[in-house]
Image 1: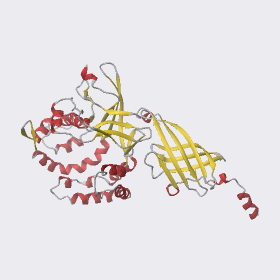
Image 2: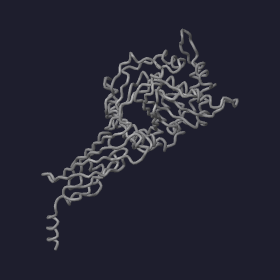
Image 3: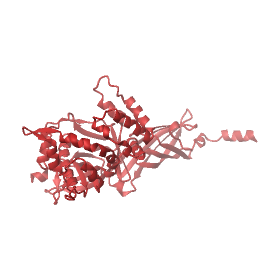
Image 4: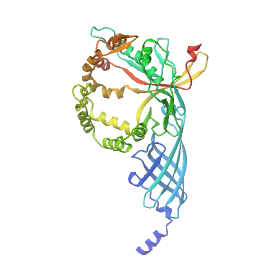
Length: 438
C-alpha cells in the first residue's frame, strides 16, 4: 500500500507541489522601485497549472496587502516563473486626495523548496504625482496673516508674559517673522520638487549655499519680498536619495541614508564615512532599545564638555518609546501632514497648492529635552552682535523687538501653552507673482 501511495504522489503534476505557505525574508529575494521593507512576505496560491494568486504582504509601502493574479510557467530547471499586473484603486478619501490608484506589476520565480525571487514595480497616479515648484511669493489673507509662502510656520500659544499681558503675542510674532525670514532662505535653496510615479523624489536645489546677512535683514524689514534667484545655479538631485508613499492621513518621506552619504561624500577624499559604515551604524541603532540609544547619545553629549551649550540637553526627558518611534521614522519614513488648496489669482487663473508640514507631535518629543539649555542659550544670544548698515547691533535687541520676549527661557512657557504648531513648505503648480504685478 505504501509503494502504491508513493507512486501516486510521484505522478502528481509538479505545479501542485508549489508550496503555498508564506515566504519571508530568509527565503525571499525581493526588489522594488523604492526601499524594500524587511518585514515583507509573499504567498502563491495556485488555481490551476497556469494560474495563481500572489499575495504581497508589506512588500509595497502604503499598501499592506495586495493580491495579484499571475500566470505561471514551469521552467526546464523545475522552478516556476510567474508574472502579473493589478491596478489598486484607493479606498480612503484621505489617500485619494493625493493618489487615486497604484499600478502593481510583479514577476519572478519560485522553487518547489519554497525559495522565491520577485521584482515588484509600482506606478502611482493622482494629484501629488507631478513636479511642484516652491511657492515664489508671500501672500496674506484679509486678516494680514500669511496665507501662502515658500516656508510657513504656524504657531498658536495663548502664553502671557510675567505681567499677565500680551497673550499669544510671542508665538504670533515668531510665526510671522520666522515664515518671512526662512522663506527668503528657502527661495535661494530649493527650486522645485517632483513626486515621481515610481515613488522617488527628485528636487532642483542650489549648487552653492549663498544666503547672506542682507537677505536675512531684507526678509525681516522688507515685508513679503523674496530675494532674487537670478544668480543661483540649480542642480538636479539623483533619483535614489529619497522616496515617498501615502499611507493613512500622511505623506511619508523615506530617506536612503547610504545613498545620501555617497552623494554628499563623493568629492571628499579619504573619508571614513562610507555608505557601508553608515549602513552598519543604522543597522546597529535599529537593533537597540530606546534606553540604549539614549545612553549612547548621552555619552556623546557629555564628551563635548560643559562649555558646549548642547551638553545641557537632557535626554532623560525623552521617553524610551519616543526614541524608538524616531528610529521607526528612519526605517519607515517620516510622516508629513498635508493640505490641498486652490489659489485664485487676480487675473482669474488658478494655481494648485499643497502645503506639506511636520506637526506638533514630532516636536513634543524634543522640547522637554531643550528646556535645560535655554538659560545658557539666552546668555549666548544676549552676548552676540551683528554688523547692520555699518553699525554693530546687539542681536538680542532685534530678537526682543521682533518677538516681544524678555528671555529665551520664556520658550518653555510658550511651548507648554501651545495649541497649534507646524512647519512646512508650500508647493504650487504655477507662479503666484501675478498678484503683485496686477
